[in-house]
Amino acid sequence: MSEAEVSEDRGAHLIDVVLDTASIARSTADVEHDRAVAIYDLIEDNTFQPVGFPAGAYVLCISVIEKKLIFQIQSASGEEVVTHVLSLSPLRRIVKDYQMICESYYDAIRRSTPSQIEAIDMGRRGVHNEGASILQERLEGKVEIDVRTARRLFTLVYALHWKG
Image 1 (cartoon, rainbow, N blue to C red):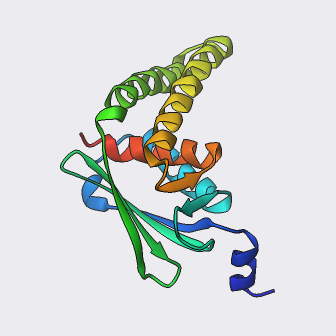
Image 2 (image 1 turned 135 degrees about the vertical axis):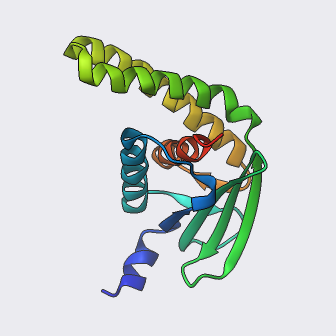
């Protein structure tokens, strides 16, 4: 089976995610690692369907410009499909909360007991789920995504927002 046939069998999905390098500031090794894992996991398993467009393989370019989150969606062949511009305001509080809890988590990994790390990680996952839910709501009517995809996209939004 060719790569195109495999791609069609998967339905609507992302085959690549590109982060605008101008939107990313230098960050910690932990944030860089989370970003790389999120992109890898996202490409491996996702549901991503631009509303009003046929199921297929898409490329997502994400950037932050003037406090706006830009989702530029292209076809697998590189043709522009649609661009969505979202305000970062609804995500601002949750990104700050997530940043604080991530810093606590990374510090705990180095200095705390396994039970303390687990407790912080549970909180971190809860805040992460909240961010993913907000992102899903913001994309409603624009792009259909499942919870796993929303979680991974939130990780990338957090990584981009780190600059601000």
